Length: 382
Image (cartoon, rainbow, N blue to C red; front, top):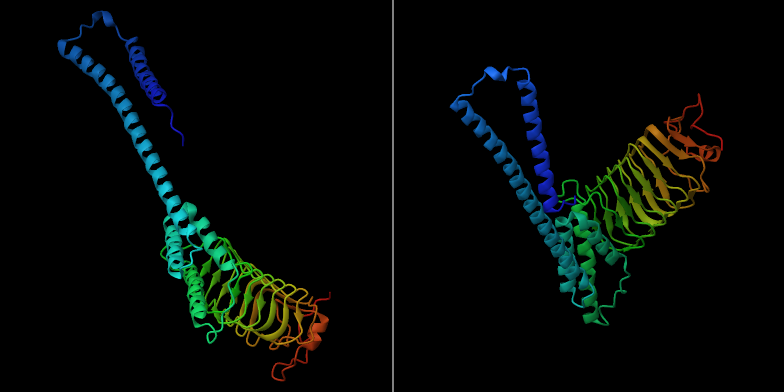
């Protein structure tokens, strides 16, 4: 809030205090008007009391002025400190980000650690620091040199790779449910990143903000989202390719928006085992299941809307063994390719699971579950 000039502030204070004093005097005279003053003779003690009251009013006005001056000095001091703090933060940011391209991996490691620490301290500039860290991950890395042909180049490559791995660890640690300084509300842009190493997002929380893995390539390593929580934000995997990683999403809770639109499952193992879809919206629209394994074993569909519109089940294995459909809605009625249908779907009509005619006829009948008295599945006409 902008402060008034000191002269105006003091003048306004004196005017208000004077007006209050005048009001009190006017009130006193109004009361005296009802009294017969001709027969009243004040004593010396009473005269002294009147003088004391007058001096107290004057002192009170002076005290108010003094408080205004002190308050103003305090605000000016705080504003100066705030400017100095902002200047210090900007200097730290410029120093850390300016050397991220240094040839030395040790210098780069120091810079990313400094940026993460600055993001912890500087709430107003946190998103800017995070954007720089994410941008580093999005930059393409050099291909791995052959160790036997050029040991020195391979060692240097591994050192630079460690920089990227450290960024992943720093970000994941601050997304934990119990992180000391959480970054839960920040936007994280991992668009187009290549992941061929281990990443651990176990017990992370996404209550707000947008996390983008759009177009990311999961080529190797193990990526863990065990017990992750998506409640109010958006986690987007649109156009990502799972072709080599092992992605574990065990016991995750989805109650926000999670998108796998146009995602390609072409070789990875992706496990949603015992995940809970309790609210929000999860879509696999136009996803392609052509190879690998995608498992929903023991998953609970209890409140979310889960859609597979125009999805292609053309290869690989997708299974729903032990999945519970007791709320929300899972739509498998508008798929584009059902040549390799998911296994483990219920053969009885289940509330919340919607299959189209072609999907229903392709469900594998289990003799132990077959119910000859009614339709095997819930069918919705296209």
